[in-house]
Structures are given as structure tokens and as C-alpha cells.
Image 1: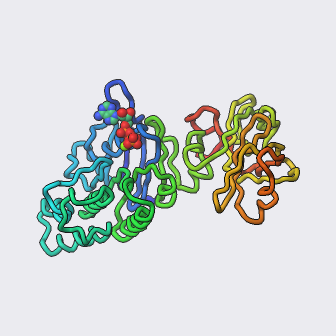
Image 2: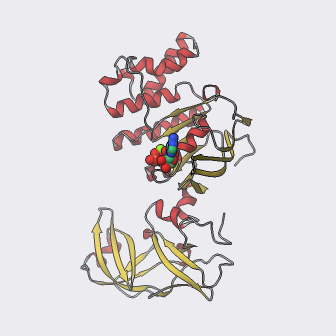
Image 3: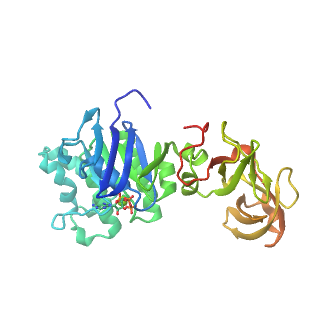
Length: 368
Ligand SMILES: Nc1ncnc2c1ncn2[C@@H]1O[C@H](COP(=O)(O)OP(=O)(O)OP(=O)(O)O)[C@@H](O)[C@H]1O
Ligand SMILES: [Mg+2]
């Protein structure tokens, strides 16, 4: 991160409801003009974290800074941000245009500027033609787009979006992703973005925070989150991943029934440690001939997905998922029936060794 004042800085922010700790103390900085996504399963604390940044929720502890200034005593209205809620509501008696214009009218924005801004925001979400309609006359996806226009029309420094594209079909969703990125580049808004769609998070974000049960387990770029997860949870949550239980013996990673497997062992990992070897299915190779350092197994199941085959291979007691691009490389394999004998292998660099404990901190020596 640059030395610029971050758009958002959280210091030890935490939230409990009664005795239920839903966001564990967290330090986090989000840069200006950053596209920052929060990913995690339902109930892990994403919305609560966003609401604490906005001021809608009072933290149990810790402090929020916006643009270098503490805002703990500043009301939501006076914070330079806007949030699009998961369950947003439009004003039913106002037209689409007036819904989007509302905040600008409150701020007494000059008429010509207001009109320009509202039309721009409606164009962004492809809703210009619907300006005169009432919310009840719109589809769910159209209402969601109006809410999105309303969130960005005032061009706040920070916009928090909680599943903003959830109600849209795939094509519109892709278009809106593109438009949001464009808006962010052109206007310089910091986005804090919650989505359940991993691909969306990977393609849109500068950085991603992965949460589980109130804890932020890892904050990193999409590439790092995907290639270098630091916990079993993150490896399994983003994309698909083989998670193979193993034990460290004399500096080697040993899988019961398979023996030593290719893996990069972090320095200082103790002998006898229970670990998980995480290998992405596309990093594995499969052959109908023995491969040096590979493991013999049988095809338990294979699924044709057009551009690739997914093989489920049983090697000893270990189930491996292997993805093979369809076409030339897999013609020999394509001829093999389920139950056919194959060999699976992967390079040591593709075998990431993680603590067996689901959400434990990184093993000693692995990159932070
Ligand atoms: N006002 C509240 N009072 C008590 N518990 C709450 C309150 N708001 C949220 N919780 C609890 O806090 C936890 C985190 O909720 P939160 O809404 O932040 O999850 P989330 O990650 O946004 O989930 P989802 O993906 O389903 O929207 C949940 O267990 C939820 O039940
Ligand atoms: Mg939520």
C-alpha cells in the first residue's frame, strides 16, 4: 500500500451482540480508490463489519478512521460514504428519477447539476428509460439497479455495496461489473464490496478479505488469495481445491496410504505436525501411463464440461479431483472408462502445506 492516507482505517474494531462475538478485533486499512471485497459464508460478519464502517452499527470496541480522521463520534449522515444494503428499500411513492435524486435534493444541489448527475447515474445502471416509473412497476433486478444508482449518485469517497448485483442475470451482471470498475476508475471512489460470487470478487477486486466466523483470515490480492492461501479454509473457500490430510515426517509430507507427496514445506514446520496439502485441480496432471513421482489410482468418476474434463480419481484412500483441458491432451484419457487405471501427479510448488486446523494462523515460515 502507498503512504497515502487510507480511505478507511480500522483499529481493533470488534462487535458483540450480547455474549455473541460476531466480529473479532480487526485492524485493516483500505486504500483510496481501492476495490476491496469481503468474501465469506453466510453469517460470518460481513454486513456487521460494513455497518460499523458506516456508523449504522456501534462497535463494541475499536475505532474507525475515514480519510485520516476518527469518525467514532460522527453520525452516518456526516460520514463521506454511502451504503447499498443487502435489503435496500426504495421510496415507493417516488419515481425512479426522484429516488436517485433524493440525496442531491437534500443537499440542495443546483438544478442543472442534479439533473446531469441523476441522468449519469441512471445511464450507469441502464435505467434511463425507466426514470418516470415507480418502484412497484419495476422488476427485482431493475429495482436493484436503481438502488445502485442511488448509492453512487452523490459520489461519496467510500461506497459500501452489500451484494449489489445479486438479483441480476449473468449478462447484466457482467455489464454492471464492467461499469462499476469504470466508475471507480473515472470518479475515484473506494469500493467496499460484499459478494457471494467468487469469480466476481476475483475479477473486480484489488484486494480480497476472506472472513470466517467473525475472523478475517487473509487479506491479499486475488492472485495471492488463489495461489497462496494461508489456511485450509481460504484454500477451500475460493475455487475448488484438493485438501489432502498429511503428517510431517523427517521433513517430508506423508499422506497415509500414498507415502511422501510433492509439497513445499515451510521452514520450521515441526516433525509430527498434522497438515493439509492443498493442490488446485488444474495444477494436477493425469496420464494413462505411469508418471515419475505420480500416484496410481482409478477413475471413480469423470465429467465432461465442454472446455475441460473433471476426473475424480481414487488413489489408495485419497480422493483427488483433477481438471484436464479437453482436446488433444485428454484424448487418451477420454478413451478410458470409469474404473480405468490412471496416474496423477503434481509439481512440489503446487502442493501448499497448510495447518490441519481449519482456520489456524499460517505455519511458521509461510508468507504472511
Ligand atoms: N442485530 C443483531 N442482533 C443479534 N445478532 C445479530 C444482529 N445482526 C447480526 N447478528 C448476527 O451476527 C452474525 C453476523 O451477521 P452478518 O449479518 O454480519 O452476517 P453476513 O456475513 O452479512 O451474512 P450473509 O452473507 O448471510 O448476509 C450472525 O450470526 C447474525 O445472526
Ligand atoms: Mg450480510
